[in-house]
Amino acid sequence: MLKEFGPNIWIADGTVVTAAAGFHYPTRMGVIRLANHDLLLWSPIALSDELGAEVETLGTVRYLIPPNALHHTFLGDWQRAYPSALVYAPPGLREKRKDIRFDADFGDGPVAAWAGEIDHAIMWGNRITTEVVLFHRESGTAIFTDLIQQLPRGWFKGWRALVARLDLMTADEPAVPRKFRLAFTDRQAARLSLETILAWPTQKVIIAHGPPIIEDGQSFLRRAFHFLSR
Image 1: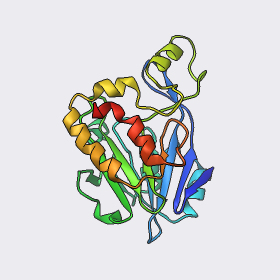
Image 2 (image 1 turned 120 degrees about the horizontal axis):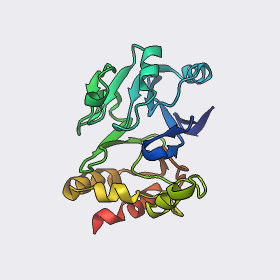
Image 3 (image 1 turned 90 degrees about the vertical axis):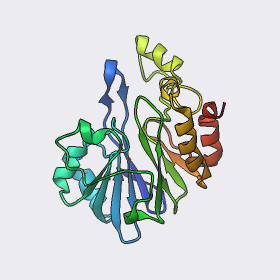
């Protein structure tokens, strides 16, 4: 179930979930192993005995990271299974999930627990969601959630297929969907966040809903967010 994506980073694909208006999406989780063998789980997918056992072979589950206020469906299950793991709240999720114990909130500054190994940037200025983007230094991997997507043509049917095409969700290359582009109402804040992201020496990019980018990641990100530079 876990697939090695680079040194000390793995991904696992999960079940399909249904969002608003009946749109369904594949799910993906990332696992990063820190130098002390603590594990950071990004966007946890549905927990199974098999997945939990596989994760535990890598190290100790220490951090649970929901990357935005939309990716939290399975967070409670992981917290119950690993009650000593620390949960970091992205902007907006603490208010939405009163049933979750959050141990810290993401801010713009570095997180001491993984400083020097993982960087992050909060993508401010979007009215739909405020996403925390990670960068794993050892593998040169940037990790996005909903801000970049690419689903295969035929994934949606009927009117949803038309909406997905117009929204760039099924474009030839992973792209920022049009709804998120329009939702960047504070472009100055978004551009400041993007400056941090584009300064990373990104080689690869993981996205939750679409195929990973495995080479020339920084150039890909410049293309994906070119609309913000206008």
